[in-house]
Amino acid sequence: MSNLFVHLPSFATDYSGAASVFYNMGGLVVIHEPSGCMGNFTGFDEPRWYHAPEMVFSSFIREEEATMGDESILLNKILQECASHHPKFVAILGTPVPALIGCDISGIATEVFDTTKIPAFGLNTTGFQYYDDGIKKALLMIEEQLMKDSEVKEPKTVNILGYTPIDFFLSGDDRRLASFVESCGFRILCSLPGDELETIIKAPNAEKNIVVSAAAIPLAEKMREKYGIPFCAMLPGTTNGKERMQAFLQDYTPQLPASCVCSGKALVIGEQISANTIRDFLIEDLNYSNVNVATFFAFSRTIAREGDIKLSNEGHLQKLIEEGCYDIIVGDPLFERFTNRQQIFVSLPHPAVSSKLHWQSYVSLLSNDFSKYLYEKINRKYPVTLQ
Image 1 (cartoon, rainbow, N blue to C red):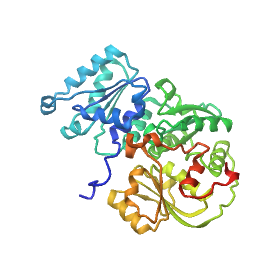
Image 2: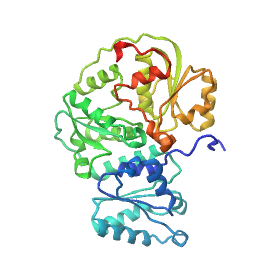
Image 3: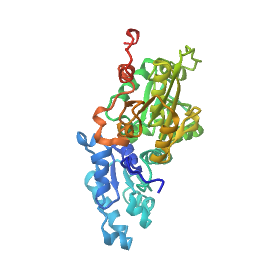
Image 4: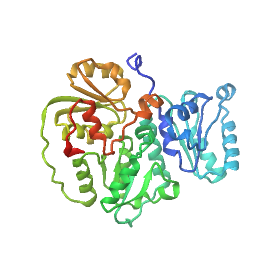
């Protein structure tokens, strides 16, 4: 019963995370399910669907098909769609029903490739894990099937790994990040997800990787091991953050000014790399001395600090807030119900948590106004020097 959520809705699931990776890449995405899971993705987890729908289909698995384990029905449906739409690839994603009956998703993908010679990805997502697990699996499978080592690196190039609307909504932070990278004298070779297969194949040619969500760290670690590409896992939000990323790209040791600290304890709840960026703002711009990060999603010790924590359930979050004596709590608006009146709550919607309930109020982490937004929410006068 520890995993029962009483106050929070279900977070975005693994098949939604995987579908978000394959979205807008020119392929056919098949969600193997009776009828509800695709609607969950297109209606609640994928904001791009409303203005730029892609080839995402439901298999509409029926009771008899599930009972008898007849996988030829799914295979024939996919082959028909391939003949009609000529996709650049096929991605088949599992959901709870095929997971429970033991459907061979990988085997079906192999049959699709053998029959059509179209690249096919079969991901054994289950609907029982969060979106970050689906993102991780999709990225690793793309690397395994498409990328090959290259001895020649294209100078002054980077890959952006892990940027999806489930974390960043349609905020334009991808363009802001690209602009910053270009200001450092580099160009983006590949955005994964984001680019099509022809570009993704060239990703091992990049000099460096920039990871913007913790779900993409396993891919970055694998690319470092196989292709010798170093990576940083961060966003250039604060002044010091920009300096650190520029130092990573240009290979020098940054000289960072010491932050003035004041008493105050804060908790940031959210995707780990985004939450780390918010922590930087609280420490560097608002002078908080003790800021912890907590997340329900992918958690890497390599980018964590002392006191950071991976949350296991909503009871865990409730206990952390009650015992942590935090002055400020930053997170999705649905987390506010766990706070008390003495604590200042700063609302920063996370699409993976509250979906379309609050995603129109998403606040860009890389915009010039983010620091000002924090000041206003914490009831401090915004200093002229930071405007």
